[in-house]
Image (cartoon, rainbow, N blue to C red; front, side, top):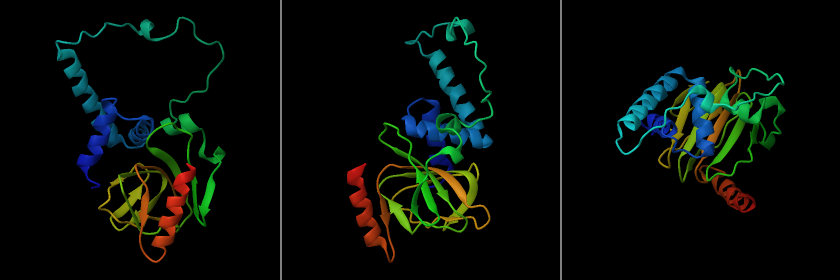
Length: 210
């Protein structure tokens, strides 16, 4: 499922403004890190803008730049965040986050977002892995730092992976750098293998405390 079509669908939904908060943060960070995806987004925004202008039932209001800003600007000097990713603007530096240790070599941080989708940051130490698993719904993974690999290839900074219930994989972080990833899981994880039953029971119990 991790093909160009499904990635472009995510970009198109972002350009059209139809995504929820979690996926909007995910998509905007993807566009920030991946110049090729950003160009696709520009194309979609242009096409959607042309459709809007050509729609006879909608009369866009002509605005000037002064209509879009406040009359008075704050006097305090603001830090230039033009080169900061959308995710870091939202959460701040990764080193300041309160990471939760899930198991050895694997940490996560879950932002407090009121949304149907669960957005989380994942930090994997060099060589750490996640047991083989799949998902009831889609899983979105964006590499923010470092890299990981699984049965389907290697994923580096700015790469995205979108999986569905047909995909089983075992992500393994780079032996040299580990990785930090942004992830969205629409529904619960399904584990397989030796400890699959135990992990699925643990996931089921944890779902009552969200």
